[in-house]
Image (cartoon, rainbow, N blue to C red; front, side):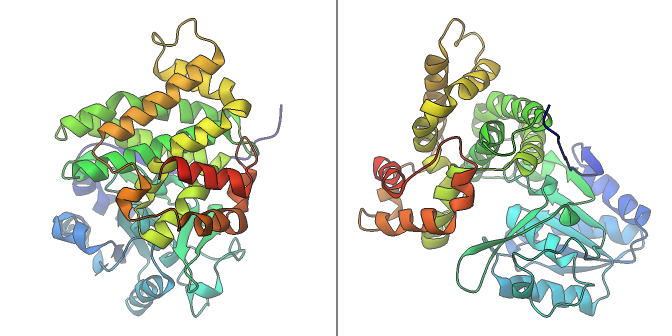
Length: 387
C-alpha cells in the first residue's frame, strides 16, 4: 500500500448554536486574552459577530473585529487585518464567515512572525513560522476552509496565490448550522455544488488519492447529495443544514489531503477575470470537465454514482453509471436557480482564448492532478460548450 500522510483539525464541533454556547469556553481553554474576529460586513450585519463577541467577552476575552474581508481577498486587505491584530496584541484569531474570511484569518494567525507584507510570504515555505491559536467558524456549507491547510489570496498582479502548509490548519472548527439558516438560495446552491466538486476531485485525484480521503469524500458527497434539494426548498430545516455543513467539512478534509484538479483550474480565471463567486464558477465548469475525464475516470465516477444513487445505477456499466452521475449534477445546477451559461454572465466567445491560456499557463498544477491531461484546445472546447 502507498504511504499516506494525513492532516486534519485537532477539534471539530458539529452542533447547532455551538458558537453562542461554546466559543468563549474554547477561547479560555487556549488561554486567550485578546481575540480578533476576521469577517466581512455582511456577516456583521446579520448579527453573528455580536453573538461571537458576547460569548468571548463573557469569558473575559477582549475582542477586536475586522469586518472588511472581500471575496478573493487581496494582499492589502489581509495586511490591514494583520495590522489590527498586531496593534491589539491578539493571541487568538477567529475566522467567521465564508472561505475568504477563514483564509484571511489563517494568514492573520501568522502575524507574530516578522514579515512586512503578505506579499513577502506568498508561495513561500512558512512551515517554520509560529502560529497563534486559530478557530474557524463557517457560515456557508461549501468551501471546507475550516478544515484545510491552504489559504488562497489575490496577489498584487491579480493572480491567485496560495500559502499551503499544515501550519495554518485551524485548531478548532465550529460547525454551527444556525449560522447557515439565513443563506439565500443562490449562495446555498453555489456553495453546496462547490463542496460536491471537492468530494469528486478528491476521489479522482491522479496524484494524491488515498484511502482516508476516499472514505471522507464518499461520505461527504452522500450527505451533500441527499440534502441538496432540502436546503434549497426548505432552507430552515436545521437537520438538513447541519448535514450539509458537516458534509462540506468532510469534503474539505478530503480534498486538502488529496488535491483538487481541473474544475478548479478552469474556475479560477472566471472568478479572477469576471468576479464570479468561486462555488458558482466551479459549478459552471464541473460537468464539462467530468465529461472530458470519462475516458480515464469512468470507473471512479461510477463508484461515486453507486454511493449516491444505488438503486438507479443497479446493473449499469461503469460508463452508464458515470454518465448518469454527471447528468444528475447538471440537473442540480440547472434547477438551482444559478446561471449556468457563460453568456448569461457577460462572457463572450472573444474572452475564451484568454481564459484557456490562463488555465494552461497559470494553473498547470491543477491539470497535473486531473485524471486526464488537457491541452489548450481541449480547455477551450470545454469553455465553448457552456458558452
